[in-house]
Structures are given as structure tokens and as C-alpha cells.
Image 1 (cartoon, rainbow, N blue to C red):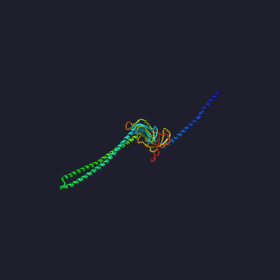
Image 2: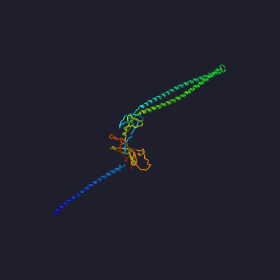
Image 3: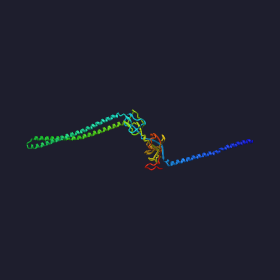
Length: 381
């Protein structure tokens, strides 16, 4: 019995020792966990205080949005004359410079129009020359008529003198009455001839005015012909579609041999070196924004790339105002929706190592509204 009890006592004592050891280790683990939580709380408090200070000093003045995209003032190229596409000088995505030929319309019809207009101009010039020659010839006609008038006036004077000499002689019986009548008839005939010649002179002088009007009409017709020639030459020059700006070719749909009407979209020139962005900020975010304030830009395609820029201008209306169907809030039930205002931001000069930027890329923009603008007071809240 004693031996059995002793063995049981030994087992109980061993069990008690085994069960007594874990409680000695648990307080140490709890202390480590408590220290870890306390350290994490301290780090969180420090991080929170740093973030809070940063937000209070500058973060609360930064307005951000991801509703922003790169843009460029691209030019859609279309011919101003109709015709079949004869040549295409560019390829997709090709770099072009201002004035470079892009597409050529078949010019045969327009070359014929130019030749026809040139012939019309030559004919009108001949009309002007003929009218001037007629005017000079009329000067000679007037000179001849004036000479005839002077001759008629001289004959009338002579007839008057003959009558004056004959009349006294007839009164004394030296000359007969028949001779006097003949002299008087000659005088009347000379006077009639004088009046006729004077009328001819007057008519010739009036003809000068008519010929001058003909010359003016010829000049007007010449001017009209020259304008038609200029229009034909312009149409001929427009058969070659040229790039108005530097850029790259995009949206190229033109095909060789197709018939293009005037105004048909052929391709687009995108000035990739003049990229800007439009950020659509909520109307509640633009209260402290001013042109010239700095902006930080992150492009989704290049998340590690950060570009700077400045506010250029604000749209004169919200995006909804320029929609195809603007909302009319005066009808039906009304639900207030925060509107967005497009803000144009110009990019600062970028280096050669910047990757390709193209219109349409999604970006994120942050504007520091606290930054002072030259010539303006800093924005405050």
C-alpha cells in the first residue's frame, strides 16, 4: 500500500510540475505581444501625426482628380476640291512638317480650267486694247470734224463778205438782183454747212464718253476674267493637300484611286509636340484654383513618371452645357448632381528622355491651390 501511494504521489507531483511550467511562460508571451501592439500604436500615432501635419500644411490645399486626359489641337485634313485621289505621299503615323504634301487630287480638270481662264483673260485684254485704239481714233475723227467746221465757218465768212459787197452795188444798179440772191443763197448754204459741221463735232465729242464707258466695261470684264483665273489657279493648287502644322499622321482613311468630295475626311495631323491636358474637376474643387498654379501629373501608362504643369485656363461652362443634349433642370423631378468644369493645364517643358505622349491618355492631376501666382495673391481658405 505504501509503495502504491508513493508511486501515485510521485505521478501527481510530476503532473503538478508539468502543469505549473506553462503559466510561467504565458506572462512573457503576453508582455511581448503587449509591447508589439504598443510599438505599432506608437508608429501609427507618429505616422498619423506626420500625415496630419502634412495635410494641414499642404495636403488640404491640393485638389486631385483622375478624370483627366491628354489632348492636342489636331487638324482633320480634307480636300477643298473634288476629284480622284492620284497620289498619297504619307504613311500611317509618319512625322510631317508644315507645308509638306500629303495627298494629291487628279489635277487635269483644274489645269483645263486654268488654261480656259487664261484664254478669257487674253480676250478681255484684247478688248481693252481695241477700246483704247477706238478712243484714239475718235480723237482723230474729232480733229477732222473740227477742221471741217473751221472750213465751213471760213466759207460762211467769205459768203457774208461777198453778200456785203454785192448788196451796195446792186442798190446802185451795178450788180443785178440775181447776183445778190445768189450771194445770199451761198451765205445760207455756208451757214447750214457750218451748223452741220458743228453738230458733227458735238457728236464726235459725245462719242468720246461712249468709248470711255466701253473701256471701263472692258476693264471690268478683264478684272472678272482675272479673278476667274485666280480662282482656277487656287483650285489647281488645292489639288495638293498640304499639312498646315507640324505633327504626325493619324486616322488615315484615304485610299489611292478613291473619289473624294470636297470636305471628305482623309486623315488627321496630330501635333504631338504641343500636348496639353484637360482635367474635369468637380465644381466644388475649383474655388481656390487660379491660372498659373502648379500641377503634378501622373500618366497611367507611365506610373513612375511624374510631370509638372500649370493651370492655363478654365472652360466658360461645365461639360454638361456643351453636351449634344444639355440637361434642362426646369422639367420633371430634380436631383442635384455635382457638375464638372474642364480645366486646361499646359505641360512644362519635358526632356528628350520622356516617353511618347499621345492625346487620349488617361492621367491623374493634382493642383496646389496654396501656391502663389505671379501678380496675384496666394489662395487661402
